[in-house]
Image 1 (cartoon, rainbow, N blue to C red):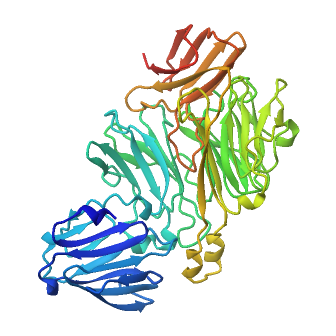
Image 2 (image 1 turned 90 degrees about the horizontal axis):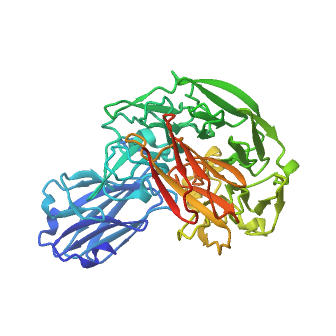
Image 3 (image 1 turned 180 degrees about the vertical axis):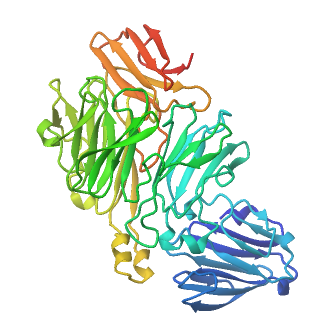
Length: 542
């Protein structure tokens, strides 16, 4: 409990896990510390003998939030009130109103116990990441100060977005020595009804300033059918939504990934909506739609890599109903049955990864494990990291591969839920919010890769200011065995988020590298001759 080390008299209001705590210690004027707090209907309270409550439940409130309860409290010298929130309502900001006679100098808010500035306020204002219905996160040094910043998008808050405004907003969190500061609204990131899920940085117009793309579509009212947002960054660091102008303002639920499909140095958008696969080809900053065929199942993940070694990016669309392999042929995608090359028809999640550093990219799926690539470019299931029981994945499953211990091989981080909440289905039936409290239990597992004797190379690029993480840059590693091609961003495996910019090359038995060729996003070429293998190589733009 963060209050354990506090000794100053006062009223402390903060979160502890999923409980809202109202605690007083050493107060001498209890009559001045009366107040009320509005919380969800299903929240349950526990009070000590020195704090009293009077609870009124209501189905309508002037604030527009239905199904809430008004908890009136009267605090004595060392009283404590604990209000436990339903597990699926962590984003609800408790609304407080204290007695006008209250001395706000003795009232402290949030986990850092910042002094209150008003008798009317909403919690949480500080460091309450679990309580804001946050979804996708995209990492990038926005202001070129050497610190990584975060763009965070928020969902529809179970249809309460308009009622909870102005708390409902997307964020651009600048990293500073004292923590993070949200400047999203200041620089033009408007929520505009977007029940966001996925977000990613991209320099779509090649001006060396990273723009921001957000997926907004939802199946269910009242936040359904809001268009996706493409925020173009101006030289002044502000953002202007140009999604409709650029033909990217979709209103459907979907999943996207950015890649340069035709190696023409501009980033194209692969988009999977509820029925169709699309490629939006970038033609000098404007996007032209290409229908890639029917989408028969909900997409769980999009994974890109040059698996066949021909110098362009292929794509695997993972679905629990019907996965599709898109093979890149001369800058155009051809839909392929994954079983034709030995890959599974169904997958909860999928990542391309050369797990054994033999120079051939393999595919890891949940729940069937690793499919190891053979020299003839087909795949063989090897029963490694397979989850034998389908009941283990009753709900969602996510995974990503990265080198957690920097020993040259990628390790697996996996998150899974064992019971599916299916909250969308329950909302559709308009059941009581009690159903939403039955949230799934989840686990996060880390599998360390034991490695082998194969050689390897990991590369991180340091780009020019404006795109220091070098999103969209391409790297070729040339050895006696041939050329491997990768694009910054293809290592990403996070759930609707972005921030994994390192590249991983397995070299097999080759202990010599002829050269590394970097094609930066602005088209500049840079070559490094005869670099040593078996290390992390950081390459700065010349």
